[in-house]
Amino acid sequence: MAAQCSGLVRRSFPAIALSLRVLQANSLFRPGRADSNQHCNTFYSAELVSWTSSRLLCTATKQKNNGQNLEDDSSQNEQKTDSTSTEKTLTEEKVKLEEQLKETLEKYKRALADTENLRRRSQKLVEEAKLYGIQGFCKDLLEVADILEKATASVPKEEIKEENPHLKNLYEGLVMTEVQIQKVFKKHGLLKLDPVGTKFDPYEHEALFHTPVEGKEPGTIALVTKVGYKLHGRTLRPALVGVVKEP
Image (tube, helix red, strand yellow):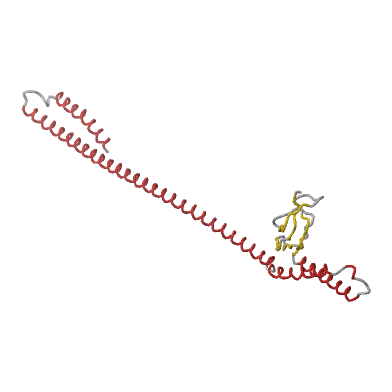
C-alpha cells in the first residue's frame, strides 16, 4: 500500500507541471491578465491540495503499516520467547524424569540382587539343615561306636577258639555290630578318620602330645588314641592323636 501511494505521488508531480505548461502555451496563464491568472491559480491550488492530500494519505497509510509491522514483529518475538521458554522447561522436565528413571532402575536392580542373595542363602541353609540336621544324633551315636570298638579290642585274640564258643560268638556279634553301624554311618555321610602315618591337619586332628619316633618323619601322626569322624566333609569330631617331632 505504501509503495502504491509513493508511486502515485511521483506520478502527480509531472502531471501538475505538464498542466501548467499547457496553460502557458494556450495563453491561459499570462502576465497582466487577472482572470487567467486567477483561473490558473485556482487550478494549481486544487492540484496542489490534491497532491498534498494524497501524500498525507500515503504517509498515514505507511505509518499505519509500519505500526502493524512493529506489532507483528513484537508478537513474533513474544512467540519466539514463549517457545524458547517452553522448550527449556520441557528439557528440564525430561532431564529430571530421566534421572528419576535411572534411580528407579538402580533401586530395582539392587532389590533383585538382594532378593537373589536372600534366596541363595535360604536355599543353602535348607540344604545344610538337611545335611547336618542329624549332626547332634550322630555325635551321640559316636559314643556307642567307640564302646563297640573298645569291646572288640579288649577281647584276647588267643581266647577266641572253638573250645570257647560263647566268647567266640560274642566277639563275632560285636564285630558284626561294629561293621553294620559303620555302614549306617557311611550311608548318611559320616566317615571314620583313622589317620595313622598321615600328615597332621589341625582341621581334622587334635594333638595330645608330641614325641620323637625313630624312622618317622616329623609332623606325621604316630598314634591315634581316639578316631575322628567327618559328616559330609565337615569335621564332626577331630581325631585325638600323637604327633612325631624332631629328636
